[in-house]
Amino acid sequence: MELFFHDVGLKGATRDFPKTIFNKIPISLVEQTVPNTEEYKLGLLKELKDKFPSGYFNCWGVPSGASSVIKTLNVGDAMLLIKTTGSSGEIPALAIVKVFQKHQMHELSVALWGEAKFPYIFFFETKSISLTWHTFKEHIGYASKFRPRGNVYRVRSDRLEKFNGVEGYLNGLDIQNDKYYQDQQSSRVSKNKVGETTQQEEYTEGMRMLSERFFFSRNSNLIKEAKASYGDTCQVCNFNYQKKYGELGLGYIECHHLNPLSERPESEWDENIKTSIKDVRVLCANCHRMVHRKRPALAIEELKAIIASQNSS
Image (cartoon, rainbow, N blue to C red; front, side, top):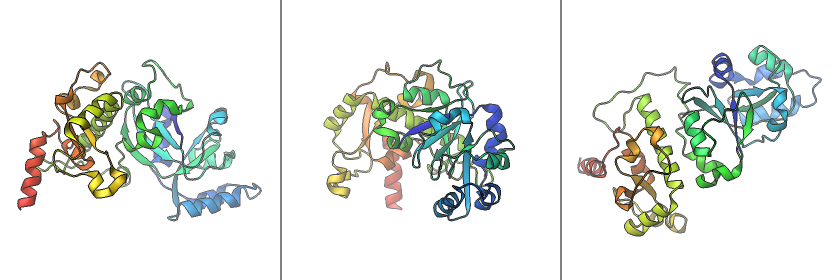
């Protein structure tokens, strides 16, 4: 699995994201639009029907000028679609490629976006994400002044080693699959319940979780010290992965940084942050996620109290 990104730009994203990224397209449009003289048509339709049994898909196209990069894209690869790199930037969509035949489809490009200049078209189901260009650059290790200038790039695999590869990096993203398919439902507001957050709080939660994982990926010795000191049993709910999953779960546990790391502004997240073992706790994935459902993050004792209250009710 490889990771790519396309700097679409604010103008193009504003115009075209609503057409095919945050709107479903019927397979029948491909059937009606791609000329019957194209040898790849039957194979394309078969793939689309196999991969999208609902009869609908999302898709994106890139210009012929990007052919040298886009032709290295394969089914199963991931593409981040950048709306803007201005200010902090916005990357609202992730595509995991399901169908891509690497033929130029000018007629389909016209039908989808009104012009023929996006002929390399790949098909997927959009995953809405909360990620900024600033944060992405930080995670991948790009220079702060780097600008992709409308191009398509493939991320070198060595830049993702600290996340255990592309899959590990994507698993850390705050993916909100239904965000754009539920009529932009109103934000859920809560003053008391941990399980209820507004969309802005969900965004913040995702960024904090990903930033925290990035921090620990750069401080592997701290993780080893935490496991040596605290073991691999969750310090909130006492869940142990090895007891549940056997050898598969041996040694697995997540590290959580106590106040103030998870509450610091994004600009302060760098490898110069001073921390020690007393600032860290080990948590299972569920408890780790729950402490970040509030801002400021819940204290360990607060989450313990919530669990105790639920168990006694």
